[in-house]
Length: 223
Image (tube, rainbow, N blue to C red; front, side):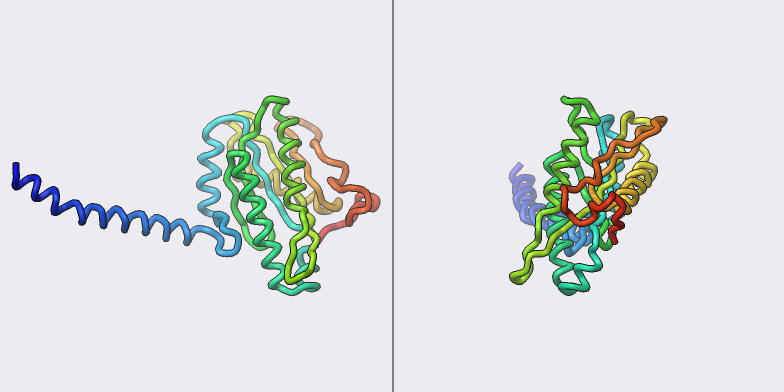
């Protein structure tokens, strides 16, 4: 017995060392799979986690987000300011996704995506609209950079996953992206793809308040 206890005692520091090393390695791997500017997952790890989320059941939505007039921000304020806007957008988007039991990622450039749960207390579509309004409000807060105020505008497309049988991430991302692009061409805001078999989309009226850029006639194209 004494020999066994001695062997176990001697092995404890080694086991503890391996445990710390494994934790360090996992953190290094996670860090390598995150976007260095925003801290969000990059495309591949995001898609892995998004598919797992969709596989858990109903009441999910997929979102694609793109910033409006981002090139003008770079041209006007410089690329460092553009990075600050991307960083702030990623942080806001990630916090919103966490608040809605979801996962968010940066697909590249100024394009982001997420999958979240949708609470069905007020009806699935109604709950989604509340989440979208909250997201747009968070994203469109100004960003301060070196004493300057930079206005931020976004376009959001969303696609509901009504049934587990519809949980095809690629298809949902494509439908959300189509809605985002359509919304962007009309000046920004958010729009929800119609449910499969439906003829119409649920959308905002330009998703903008009166007097905001892109509201004139509902046709202002965002770059």
